[in-house]
Image (cartoon, rainbow, N blue to C red):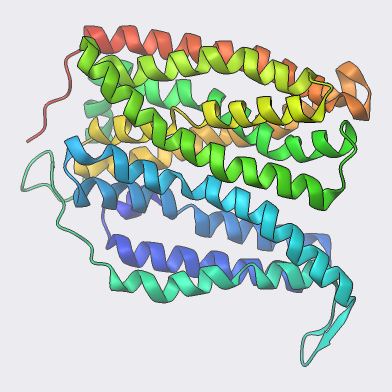
Length: 369
């Protein structure tokens, strides 16, 4: 999808991708068996895969480098606003649909409450399909050369290899922070239900509000802190240094969130962890886009998503489950499992970013025509 973004009209790519995931989300609600649901969920993922490469590339052309951090931060608030709203509103939709019981619709037959929920949450995607064509695809700037249209894989490799330290810092350090982010999103509701005895709707409201406010604030705060670090003389290394410091602070906070026995204390630490875990994300996005010529921005955004998904999304929720089942062997030990995952993977993220920071200080910033 990143390669397509680098060659095609980016607005059209977004519209088609959102249409695919909207139809796939409705298909989830129409599923009659496991395999139909599995294929429909793959369609949701395939449609969503267009969003980050196309949006990052568009933002890099809508805004010059010195003004890019804020709009990227606002864009990156989306997943945390969405996660919060999905938990808050989703819980209400589930409760409302459950109260209705089974519903029979013409042609579709009888729909269970969970099926109706899938169909209702697809509506915002349909709205976006009609709104996005109002935007324009801006002229592509900061290209390798005015004559180039797209780069071959060989040319991409020749550009990246001399700058491998810079790209490695963003593509290898960030996935382990994202791993912890996905672990939090997947398991905090279960922590509140199993350990602190909340009902599912209560857990959704509490954590949904935290994800909505703390996650969004963290994304916005990272660039502010980075700019302050720049003024303190840290130059191009300020984004990675800011990310390292926030991650070091996140380690004890996350461990405390998992081990807290009091609900108010646990919620306080969960809010702090939700704030700190999102702190570096806008810095990764802008740093990677600034390091790329226009012909590679979609591809590098796709590589970023690939790395964070293969490591973060696949290992994050699963690592907590594995620790819970095979190390602690206790359904109520989900907090301890979450703490253990943070204690293992966050220091690894710090180490990778520190190595990348060292490489960045030794290498000149890539020049672009």
